[in-house]
Length: 183
Ligand SMILES: N[C@@H](CCC(=O)N[C@@H](CS)C(=O)NCC(=O)O)C(=O)O
Image 1 (tube, rainbow, N blue to C red):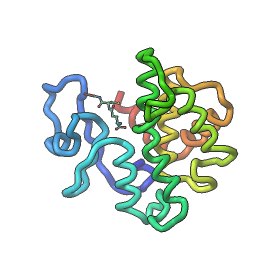
Image 2: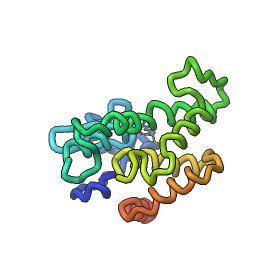
Image 3: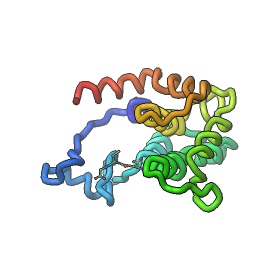
Image 4: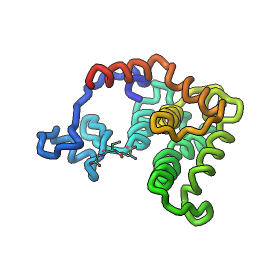
């Protein structure tokens, strides 16, 4: 997301496996659960990737990564922005932990409903809001990539094409290269 914004930023590594490794003090303030990623931006600190993407897109609107608050696409944008933490993540956890799904009573539906809804949302469009890329695609493309990495992405050509489209973006390629360099 930060590569998509084009803003200057500093990456700070947090060791999530060893809590005894000293952490940047801004991290505890930004992430109440101690989860990564987290963002510190002056006096602002927050965690959760969807919240971070929404913050950056709204705080730095000239990056053009979110429809304005009075844009008719804003509703769909917000829906898809929270689709990852609200639907994809719990549906994946339920699926991986072999819990009994209940499409009606669970707020995230179930794994199949999560995939069907995403595929229907994309339709024939290149991006989730249509022809224009947004921060919602940063979240959904990353989620599709994560599912693929864990062998969870169903063989749906439109979904795979979307994942590839997101991953091929120069910003994403730069971010992946940084992670590879760090390993
Ligand atoms: N919904 C959160 C999920 C964050 C999350 O699960 N982070 C994991 C790594 S992928 C983590 O920090 N785990 C370490 C821990 O819980 O101590 C987001 O998208 O930021």
